[in-house]
Length: 158
Image 1 (tube, one colour):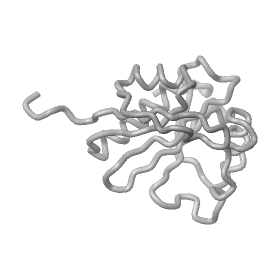
Image 2: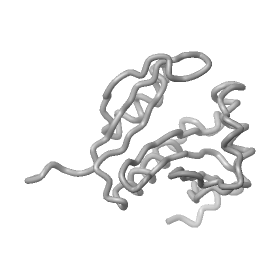
Image 3: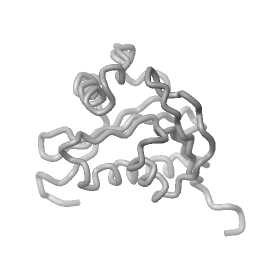
Image 4: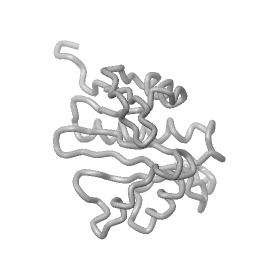
């Protein structure tokens, strides 16, 4: 661990971070990207969890993931444009995979737009495998999504 105040720090997000998350979503993915239904009293509704990254006092990334006692799913990983290409997405993904390992899950699942080549390359570099295409999944644009999975446990005998 470094004492550098600009070193990335990860922590769980809180309800007070929702407005910032909504701004980032709209900036990255357009005005229809954020569901206002996420802004609720019960911030940790269902099995969803929220993790954020700070550089000093600046929020630079977040991830939404779910774990329901069986399945671990990465729902979103977003880095603000000014901090892309700094390795922040890799840091977040490493953190989430460490969490999945600590929960002893068999695999991690995610869906990513088929035209998001940077995200596809990132996930594949971490061992995610293509599973199938979900046609016209991302609304309202109707972009196809690639379902990906990453095995977390070694096969017996290895």
